[in-house]
Image 1 (cartoon, helix red, strand yellow):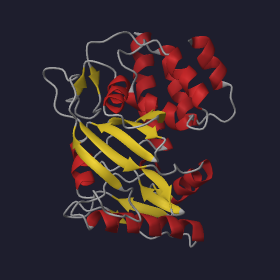
Image 2 (image 1 turned 60 degrees about the vertical axis):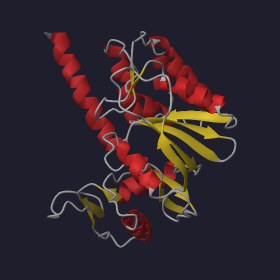
Image 3 (image 1 turned 180 degrees about the vertical axis):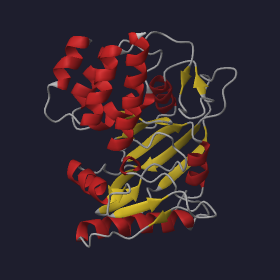
Image 4 (image 1 turned 90 degrees about the vertical axis):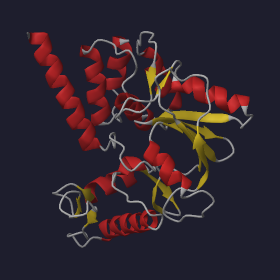
Length: 288
């Protein structure tokens, strides 16, 4: 495993966030379940190279465990088998088509289908609630939703809460250039677009217009405002703002992840902070 990771770290195109997470693997003991933030970083970082992504994931030594947690924040949705196995089993039993690829996130796992749809298992109840309000609607700035219901599966542990199955339209992920543009424009204090999560008395998120006068940041701002308006029209609020939750539809940013309180919105800066804290704690533990 270490030989493969070191080989991957030498690749020029690897992001710093994924680099840091790989370095963490070299010093940490193998987890009982692949950390969801690590899995997501690998899936996104190597989405254009599925064979290498598969090799990386297969190289990680993950001991057997009695339960698999799918909702990273609350850890209440637990399975007796790997989520990927459960998703594949569900799709096969219901004859839902051919799987082109499978990707994971902080609260779920999704199969990209040859039919142009995404079949997703999620542990995020907020995502299910949002999806139900969108079923059957033709959205411009939000991914279209075809179905959303409680997941019927024999793989729950005895103390597990329910998971949900959502069927969405398949849209593109942002390109590296589009991600770079977004991160140059939004959403930290030193970016042209400031997103204020804290000062509104009713907890509303305020998206401030860009301060740099550039066309590219104005376009990002317009997309964020339109996404927020479209979510608000369903009676809910969009609070989990970040490029990791967005796709591209009709040449503009579109809300892809419907969860409103996903704790693993992994833009580059958040990943770095998460990993740095983990590494610091690990080094401290090993030095004592």
